[in-house]
Amino acid sequence: GSQQRGASVDGAPGCANTRRTMVNDALADAMNDPFNPFPDPKNCNVMQIFFLTSMYGYVLYQASQLISEGAELLLLVPQMAPLVGSVVLPILGAVPDGLMVLFSGLGNDAQEQVSVGVGALAGSTIMLLTLPWFVAVFTGRVNIKDGVATYKRPGGNADKNWQKLMPPGNLSLCGTGVQWGADIKTNTAMMLFTLSGYIIIQGAAFQVDTSKSKDLSKQELQDDLDREARFESPWALFGLLICVLQFAYYMYQQWALTKRSEGAVQGAIAEANVQAIKENKLTLRGAMAKFRERNWATLCQKGDLEEVLLNKESMDEVRKMCKVLAPFFAQYDLNGDNQIDFEEFRMIFKDVNENLSREAQSTMFDAADTDRSGFISFEEFVACFMSFALDPCNELKEATDKRRTKANPDKYLTSEGEGQGGEEADEEDADEEEDMPEDLADLDPREQQKRIKLRALYQTGAGTVLCLFFSDPMVDLLSEIGGRFGISPFYISFVLAPMASNSSELVAAYNLASKCTTKSMTYALSCLLGAGIMNNTFCLGIFLGLVYFRNLSWEFTAETIAIVVIELMIGTMVYFRRGMLLMHGLLVLLFYPLALAIVFVLENYVGLD
Image (cartoon, rainbow, N blue to C red; front, side):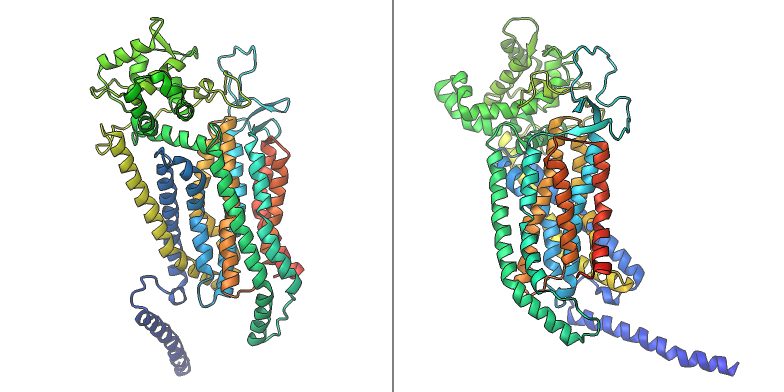
């Protein structure tokens, strides 16, 4: 018994000294940096590390949501919408990943921690091109007949129960799928072109990299890394310049698309306005503020509405507003005869948050109903609302409750490759609308725009600040997790980082694809390809800047090969197709675990860094 007590006594001081050392280290770190609110992961136990990782990840997720929602609010500002949709929105979407990459290379142990940034970059790029892509294909799938997606009712088909996906829930791998527009081919080519930054730096790395013996001392290993860094540095700078040029070209390309009446950017702007009106964040006059400001002076001077509407820029605005008004008109055009009556006209006014008296609405309807049939067509409906935008009536009256129906808004719009018949959206919105918020009810359009700008500034600013504060601690945590469990930080950040920074893209892909139209599918996949392009230019540019300015060695051959191979495989599948079967979508999903397998094999069996 005395021997057992002696053993326990001998062991106790060792444990106590270890705990005392850890406490002293934690206190020393806290005293040396008294204003740092984030604990050092090295002083945390395993449960604390997992708790902090969950908390930081949730904050970064909310930050990315704030940035996304704030940027989308700016789409409601007519003067800023083209710039926001083409330039600002893609950049803000890449901010969380870019900051993760940036902070991974700013610490004292940048050469080791930068693997977290590589994992975040690779995980984000590959996840965006696989998981949301599959979700879009699965959600938006329709029947495939003779190699063509059945977005339109077949001619002569009078079956009232006809649906785009029959039977409902059909999971045929070869009998269901999606189709997209020509923009996907253009964006795919751009994504493949922007891989040149990876090729430049990896080509330099192949020339100087040598397999490193495990017998090397720490100093010898550092000398070898310094030698490689000196050789790779000018190539990193060259790659950085290429990324900057490609980024600028892509932004210019996106801006040029805003000059078209059709396209992904204009579709996004119209969709944002429709959704904001439905959610009572915006009134119709607020959405048409740019049209009113541009043409009000001309109308006051000449009193000729026809001359205003014949102006080219005004006609572009009219086309844009047709996209906004079409869903509301379609909601009440039950039999698809392109006509609505006065009561339906009144309910649309309530839907677009414009509460006019019955007398004012009757006057407007009678003016639009030129043949006195008691009905107005979509063209007359648009003309009526354009007149209202230029000379709105201020008599307010509470309107009747609206009813919900299945709608087909695309049938009223003519686009490239689609006739007046359009595609059937078959969308149903069964949720009740909330009352108009007090801060937007009955506001002047200018005041509405001011409130929207302030909200957007607050949300994007708050999201960016949160990313700035929490990205660096998240990098430290992911690096510590890898060290604690003997796993490369690359694999940890590859899986966890995209969950925090790219979840909004997953939800957006689902929402857009669920509309089951060629346009919505094209826009959903264009957003994913655009995110890949931003990672290949904006985020990779930050990474190459770190390599050059921090004199880091490019030790990521396996990771680079995985990114390039996956993008080439997806690009090849998409570039030569105008659509994809559900079977192909499932194959794309499998590319995500394949990327991890490629890195693992190349590092552990081929011996690449």
